[in-house]
Image 1 (cartoon, rainbow, N blue to C red):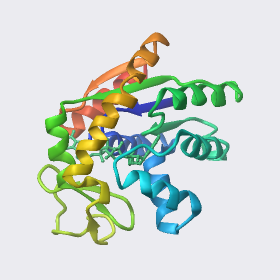
Image 2: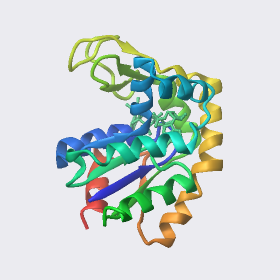
Image 3: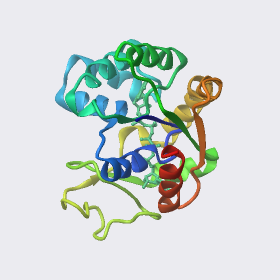
Image 4: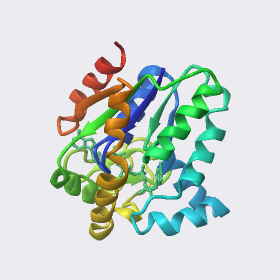
Length: 214
Ligand code: AP5
């Protein structure tokens, strides 16, 4: 099963994708994580992407499509995978369909994480991420046991560069303009499932498993 998780920044896609990995054993393909890894390694792709990400803009379609094209050839993707944050534009969604078609596969479900912008600003400004293992926390709703340190590997927790108020605002605008047309795209394909992403994390996960296992 190939599942697409899409929705505005901070809606909980990454949190739930990680839980699906544990539950299903299938990999999470996050273009945001891939790009941040490329930035930390100082690759050409990373350097190019950083200029867009720091402003809250989308990285060019050609860059992210190539990342996904390469990643889905890997053996761990044979039994299915969860896409987190890709596709994010209509051309990306069309490219994905073509890529999968060439492997005689297709998207099973596209799950929209539906939530109001005001809640997202709170979530993003309080988010903290582990520098080492990528585990995610929130200063109010998912506090680490020890302030500033990861529960899982005890490394430092950091705030993402693009979680500053001005950049959050821009990312939300970009979502409404460039990503929300995917709702119609997947509705037409009869693959759209909508989740209330404002619910508590455990409840969102229960519903996610429910809608993707039919
Ligand atoms: P990316 O890393 O994909 O960021 P995003 O889509 O903006 O999403 P986030 O990771 O910010 O949020 P999320 O929905 O995963 O929420 P999370 O689970 O973390 O992309 C970053 C940038 O890379 C983009 O701006 C762009 O420049 C570039 N990029 C990436 N993909 C691209 C593409 N395909 N094309 C072009 N450019 C691309 O949760 C957020 C917080 O809320 C956490 O603290 C969490 O603990 C908390 N939380 C989660 N669920 C709940 C809940 N139910 N209740 C309360 N709190 C919750």
